[in-house]
Image 1 (cartoon, each protein chain N blue to C red):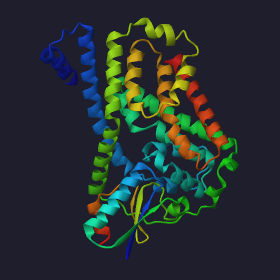
Image 2 (tube, one colour):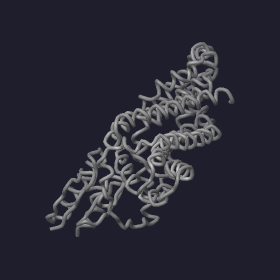
Image 3 (cartoon, rainbow over the protein chains, first blue to last red):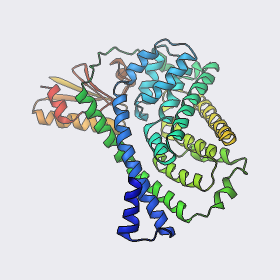
Image 4 (cartoon, each protein chain N blue to C red):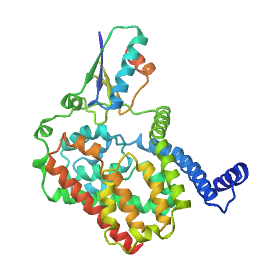
Length: 315
Length: 77
């Protein structure tokens, strides 16, 4: 249906020939734009409704006094559904630590929450299909699980700022929202996300469409194809400082995959963009010492690089 | 006198909520004290983990969202 609309728009109304580069790029652009925005609206709305059932205060109770492994797994799953915004990272972190949750489990949550986020999922689903979106989710949860366990095993509790342990959290009766409130929350949330990402999505799809029509087929194979053993490593190094452009990056990556970028390298690149972000690190600095931040970044980077090479081998 | 506290460590959303609270007070025509609470210990003492949050006379009314001035007005009647 969307394909038909895009064909109609470019080839009939604008009147560009289908076989030309311009026609192909434009068609690609309109098709992807319509598909992605439709998915963004529907999926973010649904995710927001699910999220309204899992405020972080509830996740804290659900995690309670869980032990390693089970706790790490549960935390990684809850990270998907609990709304996360980097401005809440500090109270969330303190809330978890204060409830007696081990540091490793807290990190499982902190890693999965931004990594498996709805915008990345929509972009992956829309541009790569649901199988890759699912693979990405499973990989993100697995990474949060193992990285959290690794941080737990290192016994780094002393690298949390001392004041965090002195904070006593109060008790609040949270009123249960009505369905009307949940729907309103979902509507506002969807609007808010769309307002924040639409420009990046358009730019990303625009660049992707340009690559689709104009970049020669063997270009990527030459530089970042299976023949280059450092490609995953370099991709992750570039991805870590990039953040707010997650919505814009995936369409570009998709176009590059079409031109021969191996899927593992692509997944590792996308994951490194969302899993670690500079603003989040600056905020986390308020509760943990620089050494723990470095360990956190190190472990997650290594995990993503392993994921990249793994998928390059098996996919 | 009623008192509104806006909990948050100074992010953009916290500022928006603070502005909404001020607007709500104007709408209601009452004299209400509006304070920004940025101290993490104080924020946590309300049992809140997501910010911004809004507290009226010590009771948590909204967590992790930005209610509109009209909604806040209802809470300070």
